[in-house]
Image (tube, rainbow, N blue to C red; front, side):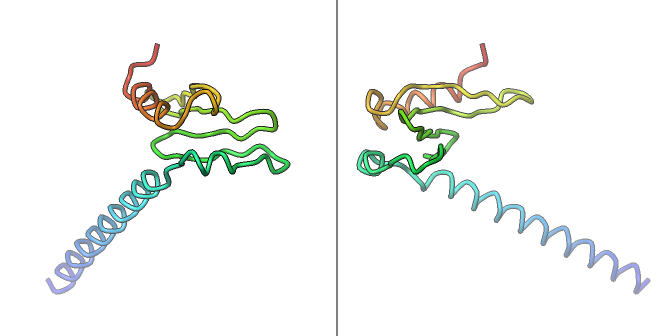
Length: 111
């Protein structure tokens, strides 16, 4: 009886600790994806440094910094597949235009 009580307490404790750690991890990942927002000044300062880079803006929106240009893309999941959609080049499409387009693409159905 004492052993069974110990097992129940152990299982309850491990389940609650795993639930706590999972919620902390999900909250931290969500906060990281929403707080790192790009500005026009930071985009203007970005330069190609010898290799292609992907800078995140959050919520699946990225800016690819290539040798010749800076391109906006959105990465999303539809079912089991990852979808990457190009929105446009940076100087033509500013941040204020791209974020609503990215939200619309992320919430729309896959063609």
